[in-house]
Image (cartoon, rainbow, N blue to C red; front, side, top):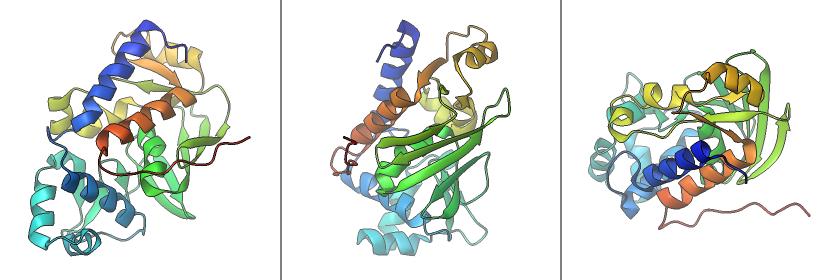
Length: 229
């Protein structure tokens, strides 16, 4: 990788942030609940606390307590109290369509689409649009490997997350600022030399996503896809 100084700094600061995410703690129970919440949402139906209790072998009270440690901005529930979005994966439409097993889901930002396939142990496809040109962008990920990118040459904007701002408003402080741009020139026009955002190519962005998973789930074993020969 040939990151410039600004990108390298943001890359490292983001990695530090992912170690404990937004909660300031990262117990095995929180790690397991996070993974199982994502995997339950993929079924496409709202996820009740009772369902997460069954998936984790915990009591409903324990699940409720663990979920309560998450900032309110990271979980969205329906009128019945069931979870419909969790830390980036959503059953509610957003600007970023995320297809898994032929089922249409959504993500809060394009970075979510890069780390989630490994958590889900799935192949997934992201469909989004360049916020400047409107051009459609598709990225297919096989667990932790880039399978296909259309068009080539895209870059992802990345900001260094600020913990308290993200706790207060994860989507406003982070997600809404992370997009795929058609190329570096378009990114440069959009950001106009701002020092708080950098461009990562797809492989760099996926590397950060995999690092996020290693730091976020140190007590769990996540899979890797076979490498192409």
